[in-house]
Image (spheres, rainbow, N blue to C red):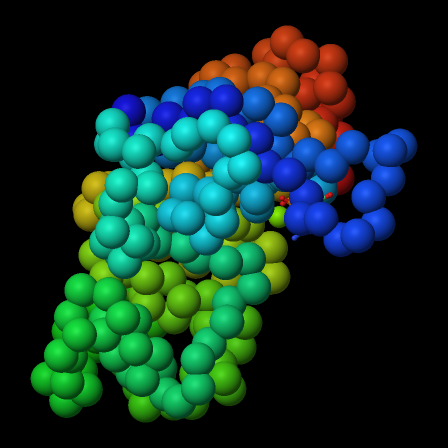
Length: 253
Ligand SMILES: Nc1ncnc2c1ncn2[C@@H]1O[C@H](COP(=O)(O)OP(=O)(O)OP(=O)(O)O)[C@@H](O)[C@H]1O
Ligand SMILES: [Mg+2]
């Protein structure tokens, strides 16, 4: 198993306004396993806890109760830099660091597996990666902040790939992109899956994207897994009443 979640509970951070009416759990007793060889999708309505669950996978946050195992080992036993190198995170809205695209890559490398990375020597490797991702090489020397959102999203993906991850956590990576940029991004993901054997754990609202990526899915509602199984089964023959409505609602949109 790639990941295993055992009795994972995540509470809302205390804000001093604790109410006895609303409960304070974001994730309630999450138990599931992510296969080694298939993409894993996380589906569910807004506010159901998808981002919270995804961020637990490389310890951007930790559960309040329960355990998470990565490749059979409790994730708290991993060196956190090594864990985040193996398990990269691509956010919903790409955030660029100051400087050029190359500066962004150098920063990512130095803070992960290559602390002595020199910009000039590293340039060729970065250019090769951009070429592989169909991103024009001239971006390397442009201020990252000036790129369009679609361009930033591809650079953000490249910045994670520089660290040679095994697994990518993708949090609705196309939600800020137009249809052309979305199609381009999905093409890249499929290429990575096929050619580099990178595994995905992806949050998406889009049933169309879910079908295209395939693999397994969970449907998360109000912090609970209400259905899990192959994506095609969840989309075409959901069993749970709420997931039926969720899939139908997403299809109707
Ligand atoms: N730091 C926090 N403090 C308080 N509440 C939080 C915090 N983080 C998340 N929540 C709450 O937990 C719930 C789940 O949030 P989360 O961001 O995981 O949802 P989501 O399924 O990713 O939603 P969306 O589809 O809109 O991105 C929401 O009700 C949110 O308000
Ligand atoms: Mg979210």
